Length: 142
Image (cartoon, rainbow, N blue to C red):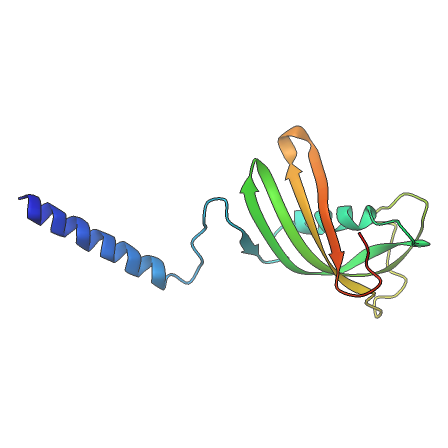
């Protein structure tokens, strides 16, 4: 009886592994980074604009987000996001107040840089923090 229970348990585990390995979608790893479609949630755009609004050093005009390229998130005590996006110079001067609605691109044809922002968001405490901002080109600075 014990050996038949053990055999059934073993077959169940094998079936689980086969199904898990053949699934088209990635199985989430608790606390691991998960990729997302950039168009799936408006918060990705909101967070990218939040990150860009903090970048004022050595700028006469705020940059603005042209396109989100890649999004990853990690659920911890809140959510960590890594968002990669294309930026260009906006019409809003520094110093001033950045707004996604009013700080529109001077030109949609000119990509100034491709940047990645790491952001921690804890909505229930209303804490949102930019933890890292790096750009691929020479014009980007944290």
